[in-house]
Image 1: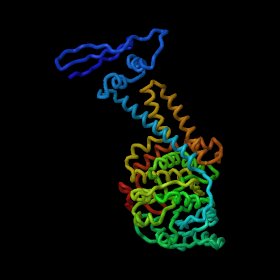
Image 2: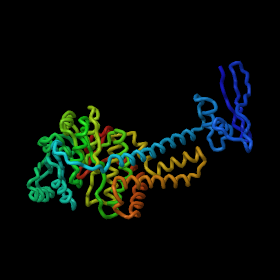
Image 3: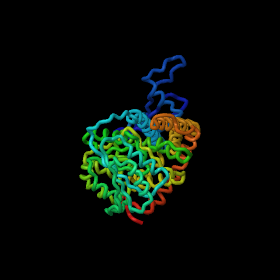
Image 4: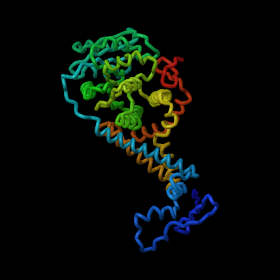
Length: 461
């Protein structure tokens, strides 16, 4: 039985000395390699790997040991292993960027053709209170060009401020099949599910569209979503990719930049790779498939019911997809503080549902991944860390800008300086928002407080 050991490589020589020892106790020095080529001699591809190993000024000892001895050699350079892992991780993030951009070009903003043979849709809209854009948002559903749908509005109380606005719009569009349901039905701790229960039970069409109050709907959006779900009988869930309607102000730009870059990148890549990453702000589902899962009442114990819709449907062999038109969020009350609080709440949900992201999520943004990439490039290849960090940041910013242009399907709705400022606010605040979510797990949503158990189950505070 032979064992191999190798002393440190001598930089002045282009030969590698390996000591071969046997079980009999003998040790024989063996020299492998060949002399360095003369100044005018050609460098063949066959000799290049050996010459790299014989004189590795910038290649860590890990690689020399690994390639010179055998795949069984145990590395001693832990930092080099960490650098390799970091390089692979950041390379994976770059690949996600590319997947999201290509998929956005392939999937989004396709033409929608009317088709009166498609089935009817029951649109369920839970409402609480009133804000400046509520009337505008609701009217976009009354003016849909889809040929067969009903609007089912869910309100906790007849005294809610949204009721007079809703009744005025219903009076303005008497030809639209619209009803209001009050008080809900308690089936769990999720107030949204409780609010929607009467409308869900009364829905008369085979497709159910759950849409938040802050969504502005394109006239052909329902047609788009139904055409997507009917394109494959195994598709039971279609969501609109979350995005924002063009609005003035830095706060609105911050929200739009987030959904057009960081969130949009993961959402598009996840759907392309068939991961469950559904959001409930605008979701179309087959009612028969939901009933197989126990109906929406079966999800009353989860705060992120939209995600678990997708999980349970996938367990039964159903597929999910995204429609070609993004969801246009159109809230008038957005501020930088309220936006960051909303993102923090979503992170708390993800931590409870997917605990492994405690490690991965804070590292996937531009600046943390830039630090990882700079460390890896410096350790493995001797690059200047600051220079590499700046290159990484510029590349990341360029990819984010390109992706948002693709999702926007046109020019930016605000000056470039707004994009840069909003992008910086988002990236610089991300570690703080994540830390807040991690160390303050209680969730405040409207007038309720919750804590989540591992797995996403609600525990009322």
